[in-house]
Length: 65
Image (cartoon, rainbow, N blue to C red; front, side, top):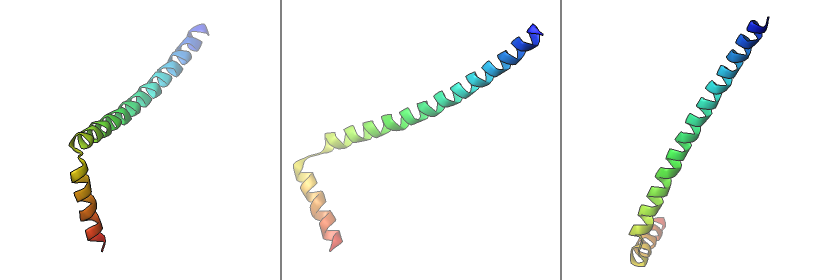
């Protein structure tokens, strides 16, 4: 009786661990996307200059007309 209880609890804990691992994997994927976005934003900010920004605005508004 006790052995059956321990076996069933062990299976339950294994399911919880499996679910937890799946959640961790999902979180890691989201962190990777966030990291990529941060790197891209840093790259864009490093390339930013007021002159190029003014030119980009000019080009964009020129396309809108």
